[in-house]
Length: 202
Ligand SMILES: Cc1cc2nc3c(=O)[nH]c(=O)nc-3n(C[C@H](O)[C@H](O)[C@H](O)COP(=O)(O)O)c2cc1C
Image (cartoon, rainbow, N blue to C red; front, side):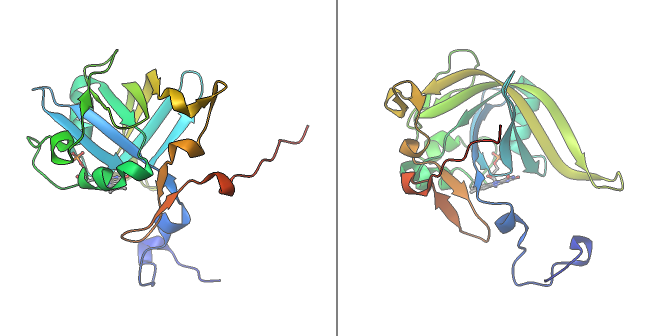
């Protein structure tokens, strides 16, 4: 077994951490600054954390525009990143000044939301309208604060394209979600043939 202590370095050509904890779903997060500027960016340190109320969260490595916007307005929209939208999702991670609207940069349509003043990506088949519930600065085990920020939000509105509801059941694979692997460029796509079923022991 290769063993390493991350504080001393991994000793490998690439840090395996996010290749091991992967593939990860992508939080494709739309937000709006206090002055009204729209923003859209992907965050793969992302997941769901609770059913009732539904809570999702993502981590920003550094205090990025998305975090600042959400702290200012208390609102954001999560959009599903899909295989047909992969290139456009990737374009929205460009390190551009806050005044650049990544919807426009990537040729995406900003569709007004119903409950929050942040639009969703019209081209994406699923979106969550969210309200900020907690904003936490992360700490190491020794209590030292790191420049990383965990944004948690309550999902207050859910949009699902009707073709993804088959007899009322959400069809995960039909949406062609993409997930982030490790390294500089690895992604994975969900396909129906990769599904298996397993029920919990009674
Ligand atoms: C697929 C993907 C996943 C990413 N995940 C993260 C992440 O989890 N945390 C992070 O800080 N940056 C992540 N990034 C980089 C941000 O998207 C990038 O820094 C972006 O410019 C931030 O935008 P903002 O400053 O408008 O919020 C990711 C980029 C890509 C392409």
